Length: 228
Image 1 (cartoon, rainbow, N blue to C red):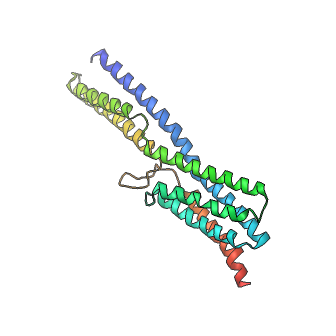
Image 2: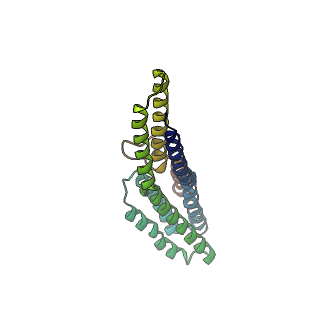
Image 3: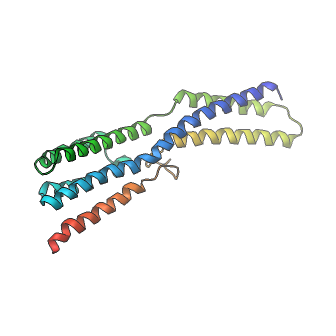
C-alpha cells in the first residue's frame, strides 16, 4: 500500500465534505420554503375573507377562487406540469384584484397584500433556482474522477491477505460512490418528477393542507351563506 493512496482518499473525502456542506445548506433552506409559501398565500386569503365579510364584495370572493386555482397550479409546477412563466403570470394576476380592493379597504391592507405577493414570487424564483442549478458541477466531476482512479488503483494494489484487500477495496468503493450519489440526490430537493424521485425530496404537505383549508373556508363563508 503506497502512502500516496492515503493522500488521495483524504483529498477526495475533503472534496466530498465541501460538496455536502454546500448542498445541505440549500436543502435546509428548501425545507422551509413550502411552509413559508403556504403562509404567504393564506395571509392573502385572510385579507380577502375580511373584505368579503365586511363589504360582501364580489372581487373578494373571486379572489378566493383564484387563489385555489393558483395553489393547484403551484402544485403542478412542482411536478413540472406547469411552466414557470405561466405561473409568474398568475402571480401577477393578483394585481387586478388588488386594484378592485382599493375602494373597499384601507391602503395599508393593499400594501400588505403586495408584500405577500412579492414574497410568493421571490420564493418561487428561489425554488426554481435551487432545482435547476447544480451545486458546483465541476466539483462532482473531480470527485467522480478521483473515485474511479482510486478504485482502479486499489484493485491493483497488493495487500496480503486477500480477504483484507477485498474488504478495503469494497469498503472504500462503497463509501465513495454512496456519498457522491447522496450529494447528487440532495442537490435537488424538489425533484418530484422523473424516475429519480424518491423520499429525499422536501415535503409539500403544507401546500396540500392549504388547499384543504381554502376549500373549507370557501364552503363555510361563501357557499354556506347561499344555503342560509
